[in-house]
Amino acid sequence: MGSMRQRPRAGSRSSKASQSRRSLSKTPQSPNPRSSQSRRKIPWAALLLLMVFMWVGYRQLVTQFSQPQAILVLGGSPDREKFAAELALEHPKLPVWVSSGSPKEYSEWVFDSAGVASDRIHLDYRAVDTLTNFTTLVDDLKAEGITSFYLVTSDYHMRRASWIGEIIGSNRGVVFKTVPIPTDRPPEPVIKAFRDGGRAIVWVVTGYTGTGELRMKDDK
Image (cartoon, rainbow, N blue to C red; front, side, top):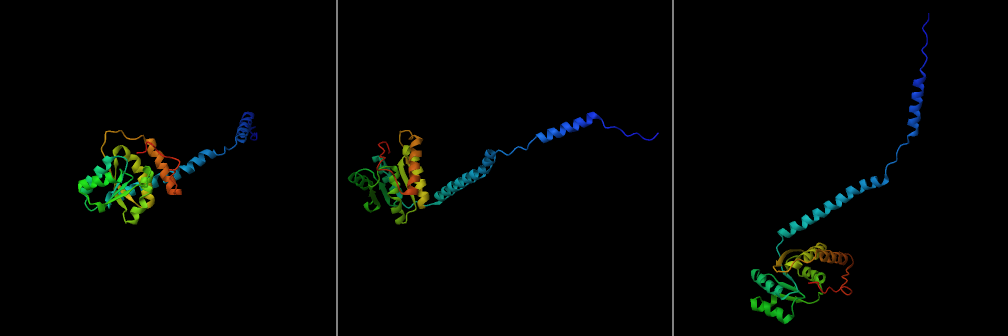
């Protein structure tokens, strides 16, 4: 007898048909736009963070190797002039700038009593708060060729002063080394540093300090 053709099994046909129907019913999923956007943003955020760290490291390196050319005292307590007078004796060639410190007669008496020559002392009373301590003098210091100085203020006030000084100094090409005066007072709330740091950024961008509308009673 001749070879007989094998009939296809009904079960195999139905199995293949069901598989094809299942494959057709599956539609490709479109990528989640939010996840793709977040993946694109992460490299930019990482790059920005890297640039910030590099800039901070650069500023610290420049500050470390800079030689201060002056002493800047932020007014607010008579002890700051006394401390600055002692620091001036340790650095007899550096001029001393006092921003809105004690009354003129008292400040002159403090430095004179310590033996600091009067021609080294520069008293300036234009500042009304910590921000304007820097904004009123930074360009004057640059005009005198001073791009590095000792920053003198009370220890509890130094964080806020340093943040403001760093923002303004970065814009003006000025660096400083902090010399905090020891006190028994606790550090200021960090929110004050954030607040005035933001004001410093606004000043860099717009030249506006906001001191006419915002006078800080507890500023110093």
